[in-house]
Length: 104
Image (cartoon, rainbow, N blue to C red; front, side, top):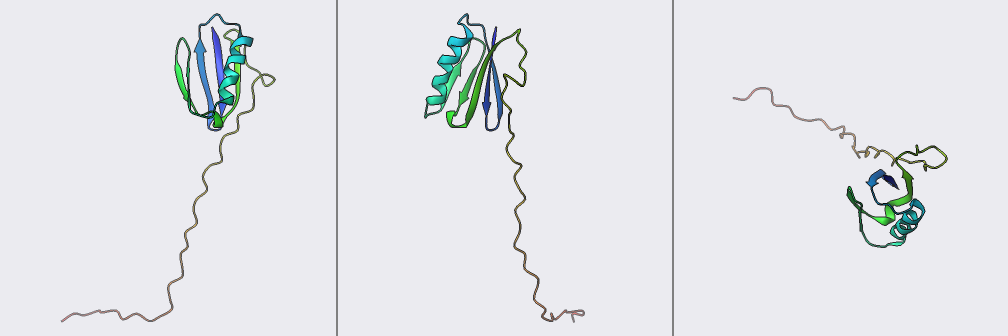
């Protein structure tokens, strides 16, 4: 079994495939995904994924028995947490306000 790990801007996508195609040939075929300009559906024998190629930064194909290491697995950067929006709150004017204490 082969594992296909697709590194995207928002995190990795991992797919499994039971195809007997050599991993080198599979990686070559998957490189076409990187050249695509439209959203692509990647189907394997066990799963499928809808992928936006512009967000893909790398693809790794390895045998199930291989263990990914830092040498063959790209570093995945998580997107920055959204910063809190600053509110433009103005100080209240220093005017006197009439307060009604008794109503008759």
